[in-house]
Length: 298
Ligand SMILES: Cc1ncc(COP(=O)(O)O)c(C=O)c1O
Image 1 (cartoon, protein in one colour):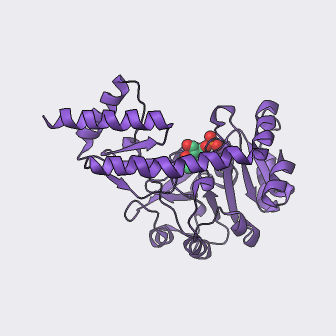
Image 2: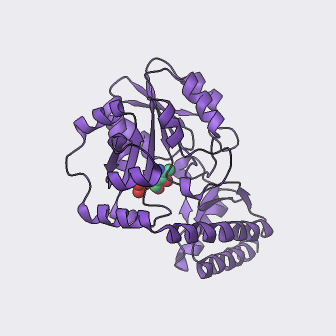
Image 3: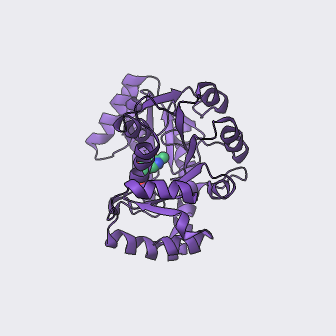
């Protein structure tokens, strides 16, 4: 699998580690490089696996305030000290969908202590077209203190097989290999991932689908008076009037068998995260949100 990934991305297979989902690699990074009294910075509304992994490693998670639901390099750097061992950035982030530009990532890297590893979690990279975006691979090539994580769970649609990977310097890879359990990924997931890497058409179609249905769904929601946050992944962050309205909508949809995501635990109780579905699913969901709003206003 490392050979297939190396070939696909034009990188060195010895700088790749595979994991039981990228979650495992994110957790291995915390266990390997942070411990009691060490600090790990992540963005305020960043992916929740980061503080979980950091606490499990006995270290201290330090959330950095965001600006307009976007990671803020200045705020991250103002919190960084010699105790900071890792900094996690999901790019784009789940659940906000916002991203940092390549230049912002470079500013962040240059401002962090040299011994602090910058982890760029590019789980949704395949969905992003923006010209100022980097999936992190070119940055790993330039800096030996950046690790980039990727997954087969998103655009490849293989989440339940639990397969992800990390690209980083040989030093980082060597340290992680010291604590990685030898049989952390299973052969079925690896075989599926290798085949998936060959299926360019699937990825192209999935991307095209997202490019059509994400803006379509956003437009519908905006028509209903629900503000959406400009994101670049395969989900929409929708802002309701308040927590009560968001919760009621979540329950209303659940009763119709439509599952979207409440994100109270991300500190965003008045928002719901909506993943782009199949054409029919998007249509039914929008219709039901409209029904909910008509009924809620009464
Ligand atoms: C930003 C981000 N990173 C990593 C993951 C973990 O993906 P996996 O462990 O399935 O590879 C997710 C999944 O929700 C995610 O949203």
